[in-house]
Length: 107
Image 1 (cartoon, helix red, strand yellow):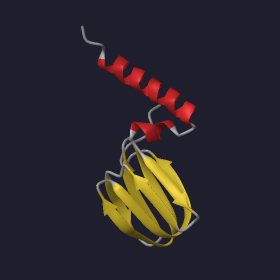
Image 2 (cartoon, helix red, strand yellow):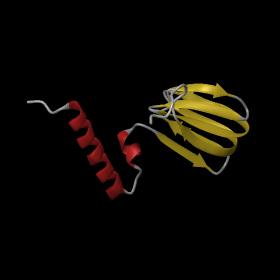
Image 3 (tube, one colour):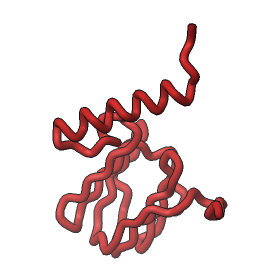
Image 4 (cartoon, rainbow, N blue to C red):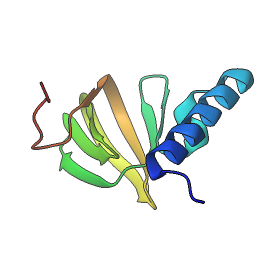
């Protein structure tokens, strides 16, 4: 007797969301999928980075599971990149989430 793979995943996600609500934490933090933290406007930490897609002093694009993270700013540098953890320093002006590079929005 084995549960359907999708049902197991949904049950696990539901449990993590419930636990996150009780602990007053974002649900994705407990799942270990992705975490982003901005300290002031000068330091950004990201866990769950799969790849750096673009790197320039004005814009960095990083691939995560199921989406990309676009960081815009001035004098941006990647000071740390190890084991999926990235530290970006500089003047961060915006952070946004987009569809993965090369994918179009499903209608």
